[in-house]
Image 1: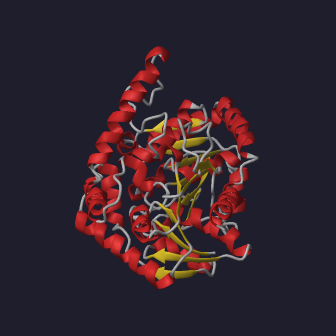
Image 2 (image 1 turned 180 degrees about the horizontal axis):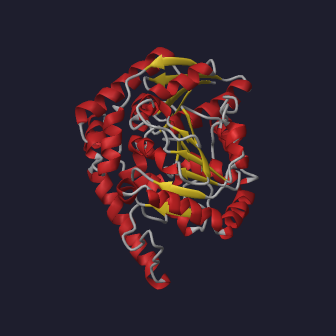
Image 3 (image 1 turned 120 degrees about the vertical axis):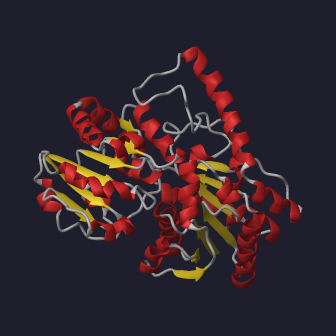
Length: 406
């Protein structure tokens, strides 16, 4: 098959999920071409895949929309949505793919419907209309207060409905574009689904869903097999009494880089990945027990790690749990906060509120000590890792793509 891969090209997580699937499909004889114009595609070029230029969303708008919860910035402009759709249609005419595979490409289901092309999408299970758990749970606080069981599901169901209706109102641009092309109306998170097949990069125990259609399939976590060597600081870091990995993703809080000096007076050794914020690090005083990396091969450090501090992103959570590493989540938006809340609910770590962290970074130090000194977090992470042993996300996805479309 000739497959066109359309990720959100500014997000390392969304790019690398398609990249892992593409590597398997290429080994089976399929031709995969990526398209986008974001920095994440540098990783695709490094793996020697063909990459075509295709307009993508402004990353600043993505960050502003997700942090402010004003998704109208992403989906509300009909002219912008139609521009993306037309750009995709032009690429389909040029490349004539047999299949379009997307991951967080907001117009892929629209453009493939117009072009009558097969379409599959990779997405997080909670970002579907079938989720049992809402993004925003006002009755669940960071201190761990839980709703009474008799009230929990009715309130969750009510909030899920409100969230979907609210989100659907933000899709003005998507709805108008689909009307112009005389396509069927979609509702809320359905823009993110595959037209013909949806691959859920999750496991049911972390994100349970209700009443899934037959063309929705859990495939398991799809985590990046990073080709980078182990960091030069690995052996020194491993000698630390408490070994910490701090990573906040490609859309993370650049402000937190400035707080690394707070680790100076602790018994921790800390590896910090900063991605494209690497230039900011030169302006910050870094203590001797903190090691800064742009990107890292996480599989080289997680086997030795006592705790990971992360943004609560899907891939990072699962990669940590594969190595039985407890997690502290500091999320920058609601989708990540869902992951951080699930971590806390399942006893796999702690969730911190970003505003509190920005106000006083010592809450991070205290949370690290609490997680390391509470054996139950490690025990729960070890038990959860056993659930992940039989899930081969990228392979399962590739198998389903061949089953449905070959």
